[in-house]
Image (tube, rainbow, N blue to C red):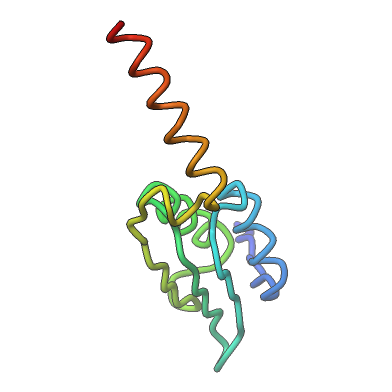
Length: 102
């Protein structure tokens, strides 16, 4: 019986794989190698993205050679919209509300 030996990807290969599998939704993504282990740190906007990242990392790297630290951040619309977009979003919502109530 021949067993397949899985080679460990480089930090850059893992980073690229994580970006693809999470649809580039990880922020502040960093992948480094230290003491023979790959260390991944990132921030995600949802638990779903975090799960995608964890699954993608484990597709390429065994748990014994991986350290994952992915922080999920709760956000408000002001965190991801600039002031002009936020104002336009609020104005659009007010207009839609006025139309419905008229």
